[in-house]
Image (tube, rainbow, N blue to C red):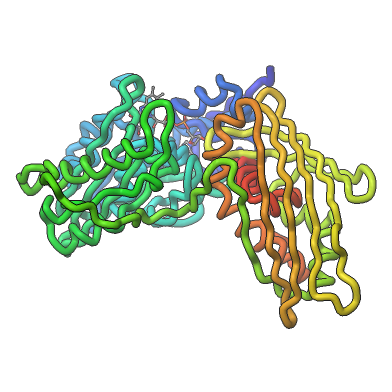
Length: 473
Ligand SMILES: Cc1cc2nc3c(=O)[nH]c(=O)nc-3n(C[C@H](O)[C@H](O)[C@H](O)COP(=O)(O)OP(=O)(O)OC[C@H]3O[C@@H](n4cnc5c(N)ncnc54)[C@H](O)[C@@H]3O)c2cc1C
C-alpha cells in the first residue's frame, strides 16, 4: 500500500507552495470524505496538506454587505454562531441537520463545497443564498461553482478560503434524510431577498445541486405556497438508486419546497386535491444528463481547414497537448498509443494505463470536404476496474472552417461501473468543451494551458470529462 505523507503548513503561502510542489497531494480539512474515499481505494494522494492551522480559514465575521464563513469553520461552529443566527438562520439550521455531533465537530464548510457530494446540504444553502466562494485565485459565484456530481470549478491547487453570504430577507432549508447517514435524500433551500427575488436550490436529485427556475419564478411573482400549486419537477430531472426512485425524489422536491415556503407564510403546505400539474421541466442545470448506455455526441466548429484538423487529430503531440493531464504517451506502432492518465473527480481518483487505437477510416484527399476517423480506447485502473469507448469522429469542411462531429459509447466495469454512469453524465459537457478549447489552441499554434493529456478524452465525451477532472484532484 502506498505511503501518504503529511504536511501541516502554518501559513496559506506554505500550503499553496506544498500543493504546487506535490501535484498529487490533496488538501485535508476534517477528512470526513477524503479519508473515507481513501479507505475505499478511490483515491491515493501522495501527501495530505492539512489546513487546520491556517488562521485565514477559521473565522466567521460580519461585514456591512456580507457574512464571511471561513473554509475550515466546522458545521458545529456555524450552528452556535450568533453572527450566523443573526445574519441568516437558514445556515445554522442547515448545519445543525448535518449527520451527528461527531461529524459536525470535524466536517467543514470548505470540505463540503470542494467535495460537492450530490446529496450534501451546504451546496444547496450556498446556491440558494447566491453566495460567492472565495478561493486563493478568485471569487466564484455559487451559480458558477457547482459544475455537477462531485465536480466544482476549482482548479488544481486552488483552495477555498471561505464564502461570502449576501443578506437574505428570509429563507429556509428542509431535507428528507437518508436514514443511515442523514445525507439529503432530497433537500430544498429557499431564500427571498429584500427585493422579493426568490432562489430555490435542490440537492439530492442525483447530478449535484440545481436551481429550480420554475419555482423561483412562481414564488418571485407571488410569495405564497399556492403559487406552487400544480408545480412538480419532471421525473427526468432526478435519478433513482437503491434509496429512492427518480419520481419519488422529484415528488419530494415539490413537497419540501412547499413546506419551506409555508415555514414563512404560515399557510398549509398541502397540495390541493386535483391541482393540475403544470409543465415545468425547468430545473436550471449546469450539466446535461445522458441516460446510461446512451451514445454521447457533440459538435464543434474549428478555425482550420479539413486537412489541418485531420493532421492534428493524427498528431500525437497535439493530441497529448489537447487532453489536460496526460502524464505520458508512447507510440507503440503506427496509430497505436499507450498513455498514462490520472483521472480525478471529487474524492475519486485513479491512474489509468490506457491503450488507444486510431482508425483513419476516410482520409481527406485534395478537394474532398469530408473525412472520418474511429478511435478505440481501453483503460485499466487497477482494483477500481476498467473502461472502454468506441469513438467516431466526422469532419466536414465548411468554407475556411471544419465542423467536427463526434459520438462515443463508453462502457465501464468493476467499481467504476457503479460510479461510472453518473460520473460520465456529470462530466461530459465540460470535458468536451475543455478538450476542444485546447485542441483549437493547439491548432492555432498556442500551447494549451495546464498539463497535456490524451486524445480519446477529447472524443469519448464521457471518459474525457471523467479523466480530465480525475487528473486535477
Ligand atoms: C457519516 C457521514 C454523514 C454525513 N452527513 C452529511 C449530511 O447530512 N449533510 C451534509 O451536507 N454532509 C454530510 N456529511 C459530509 C460531512 O459533513 C463533510 O462536510 C464532508 O464529508 C467534507 O468533509 P471535510 O470537511 O472533513 O473535508 P475533507 O474530507 O477533508 O475533504 C473533502 C474534499 O475537499 C477538499 N478540500 C477540503 N478543504 C478544502 C479547501 N479549503 N479548499 C479546497 N479543497 C478542499 C479535499 O482535498 C477533499 O477532496 C456526512 C459525512 C459523513 C462521514
